[in-house]
Length: 71
Image (cartoon, rainbow, N blue to C red; front, side, top):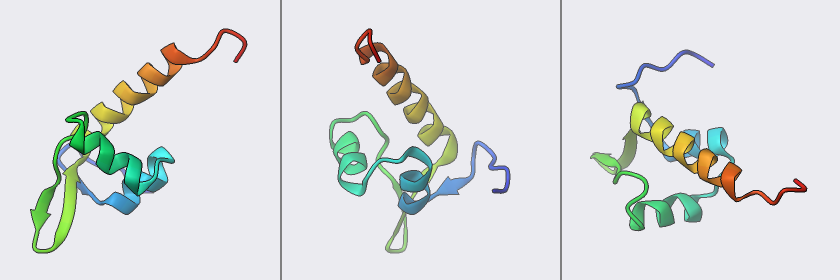
């Protein structure tokens, strides 16, 4: 995969593949205000890569703290 700059734009397909999360979960994160609203380019939705990475780090950190001790 090519190196992305912080200001690159990524689509939902990229985010789903990279994070392992589904479309419904990602859009629920937007609705809860945890993930920024996408930029609309015509009918396409795109996110700034740096914003996505920040959300992903935050989400993974939260998941790590919520794991049971035996995991």
